[in-house]
Image (cartoon, rainbow, N blue to C red; front, side, top):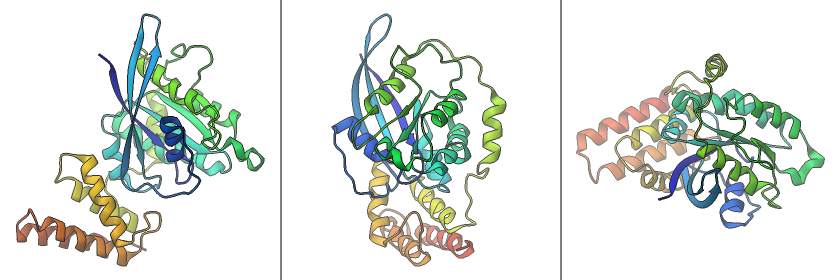
Length: 291
């Protein structure tokens, strides 16, 4: 019997998370950028040699919206995660800083310690370099949590990659695969490290003070009615696209349109009073939000 693990790619918008998945799973590269709305799941089967046997490992790879502020949506995705690939863009140093400012603290609020591999993507654009192997390696060293020795020669917890050329993409994911199968318990992590990172991040799970926070709350409010997150995200992606929402810079009118679309959907399986209450609550979040 094989082993199945849920992993997530984390990082800011346009660092190349979706392109890395496409290169790893399908050996394809698409140059156009489209923001991932909600979350998308791709499956990849691997055979991982271990000291005792070769393990059939299935990675369920979750690709999520790379925009800070969707705390509820991100936290919901992180539930049950076994490992993560943290992705920065070599041409934008701020995306490296964003990993510790937002993505790692938000992840640790849900799952605490999991194996992680750090990736500095777009090495084919090295002439525009803002960060590189030294910076990503130094960051990765802070999050090994006693897993030194879990990786065979040639694999590592930090990589520079290119989704365009395929450079090091397979090795980065295989490194995570080996970490996921490491059967020695990690040393006690330095809890002060991630507690301080959480303190640096967003401490509220539902912050409706901004328009992004209001949209995040609306998405979570709708998701709470369903057990199947993946099916719910398919529906939400359709309705968000229909409303014309730019998830990186949502416009108030578009978010109001989404509220009406969701109310229409809910009217098919909820009573009128519940639908009206949901709509009024979501409208209130948008009315109170800045921006």
